[in-house]
Image (tube, rainbow, N blue to C red; front, side, top):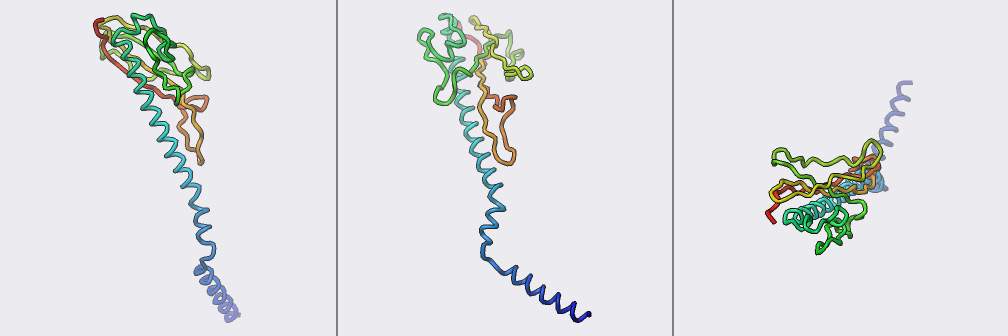
Length: 187
């Protein structure tokens, strides 16, 4: 009986070694194992790059909006937040880059402070629980005031494979903020 058992294991050992040397279909199997992780990483990198580019565009728009207040154009023309975002306030062209953002979902937050150390540049909340907030402070300053101008936008996020997401809002979007802080010039 021991001889039969030994012969059986020798035959099986040859079968296992032949299986290990076989290479037909190995590439397809290896790709099937690696592909989900590779595609998830690729989608995550692309989505993060687009998000970062949009964040830079929004930051530039916030600096442009701040310039309107810094020079007194917004105050002298009695501009509203909507007019500054979309244009239509005297000679102001608007700061919303419409090719990348839905300007109707962009909000302008304008506050003035007595000192730079007391100024808050933290992002305002876009939701109160699950209810969206649609009105924000709009206090255009006077000459010499310290101001913080923020553009906020809920960037729509597409969930990636394997659970990757940039979303941090209840509606599955990511909050994006552009900030500009300055002292208003005498005008």
